[in-house]
Length: 182
Image (cartoon, rainbow, N blue to C red; front, top):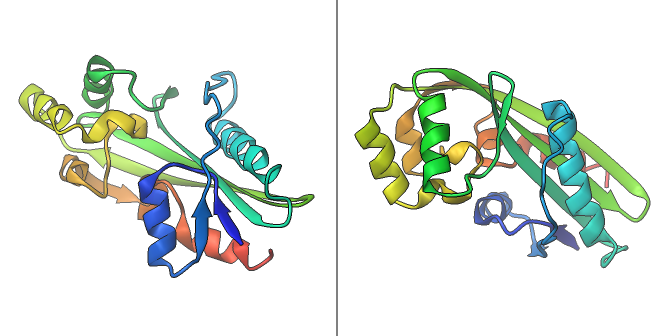
């Protein structure tokens, strides 16, 4: 069986839309980031930590762990702590470019496979009112970088270069290829 070590409804929806049968089993681990790591290393470590934790309960199944971060000028933006933090992030990203990294870890028994996908995103200029209205929607509160490109946050994005699903939080094409080896 396939196990998704994530409580993200977006990741579950992507797997569902891809026609995969799976079970959701969140890791519920502390996701404190080691900001001394490079972004690629950081998302891999977080994804691996989640996958290995859940895989210990399901040694005969394939477990998928994933983590997504937004990086702006070297600063890692995870999920906002509160509305003020969401405002700070969106103000930083406004009218500028940032990079979204999603790390994925697949585990089955002793097999471990990891990969990272990265996508550049350019945000539109966001007025204070646009930011405040978006925050009031509640959408940015559990999203890295405080926006969801697949939701209302898509209106904040000017354009991107790379994989849309990396920004959503699960690079589907690469994941499906990696699953073939399991």
